[in-house]
Length: 409
Image (cartoon, rainbow, N blue to C red; front, side, top):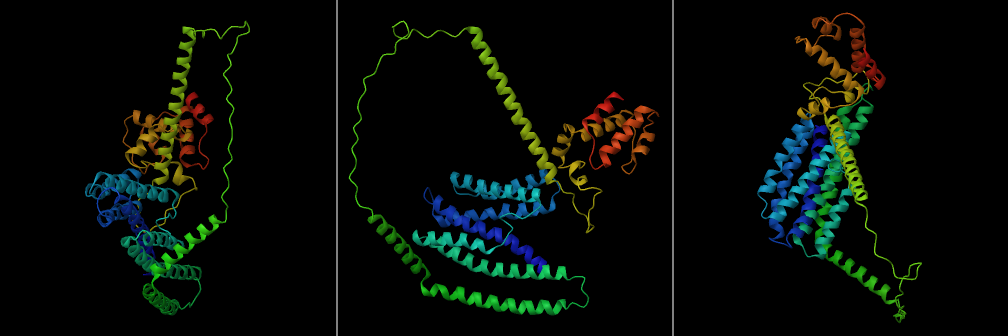
């Protein structure tokens, strides 16, 4: 139960942050069109791509399906937005959410959308103070209640997380009173939450908004007082002497002669070099983008778990170096053009087997596949077999020298 509550609070954290940001976004959009309340209500549709992308990040195996599901979830927020500007803004916010999800999946860790912490209260406080000075009732009310609810959620999250960590460390201890510890912890937590709720309900009756305005006026008055301490300084007049232009002379005593025209062959060479340099730069950029996408697809890929079995690999690199069909269609396309020695050798092996048009079973060993394909015994088969096994099973993988050895054989 505690683990489910922790998971729910982690997702509620990001949703509350988005709602707080939407109060500021709706205020800015109101300068160009409808009321801020209207934009705020339509902006809540962003929670759809937020929730759907969280589900896709957890359940999908490749980045292709993840992007398809996540992009489709942005349609409601963009379609129902009241005007073009809000459509663009809501789309940008949705794209930012998807990018954050991708970053969290790639590094397999937490992001700003999944880390509940008391520091988030600063965000709510900033928007609350801005709402007070702008006399924006939407911004003040929403952020106050968000801060109120967030304190409760963070207290529960920190308490349950600490308790889970404690129980995990002492899991092997015999006769540990797990149930009694849980009951005692829940009673203490209820006491803290009751005190927090009481304080948060009483504070508005003391005129919190008036106190914020008074503090703001005091800060402004202090700034004016500091500026008044600086006496008025008489401006210093500077006289700039005008220097008459002088005529440039050539060594022969005359004015500069007409510019010599550039030879045609030099202009042609200049244009050719410009085109060549531009082509090289463009090729480097394209290659860099392709490699970045390739690495992103491989890092994003995660096999779908069909049960609770723990997945283990022979070496730490086996789960990243090569994943068959990683990322679906995109993975297969990138695999075909992968220049690494391991990929080259494995492609050569597959092409050699496919030339014989032999049907093989996925559970067959390399030796059984070669026998089924009726590859002739000899040096060529031995080299191909050894290098394929090295590319597939070894920790360090193959090198360019191995690729050259295969080509020579």
